[in-house]
Length: 189
Image (cartoon, rainbow, N blue to C red):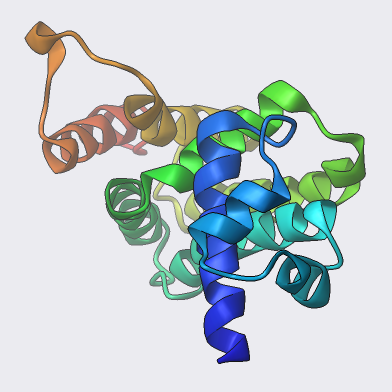
């Protein structure tokens, strides 16, 4: 029962923090949504800040799971990550929402951990671009830092925008085309 309660609190925390932010979220509301006792939040997470950290870490773990299972060949690795990140955004849209909420609210108690997680993600993708340069798959003069930021933007921007009907696309169609456009500019010919 305890692990079930912990998972319910994590999910309720994700929903509340993502949709209304840290400051506007009360632990009472989370406990009520999770059908849990208010003291269960303190027991499992040490309080609201601990729950927030656990929610963000759980979201980050979802990203790491995708990265860890990616193939090794650079272009295939990027394609795999883009496709699976798009699927993650479709299946769990609150992950991106809580990331955006965190950027807006900029909680000091989270900055060190978030910075470390961002470093992991940026380094992961920069290494893929470096490997692509080494293998001759990508241009030798490719700026890996800029490519990393551009790649992240291409993947995530689609899911954070409210597109007018004239720009509505099926998400996987967008990802496929976005990758085609992205690779066309970086393939070594």
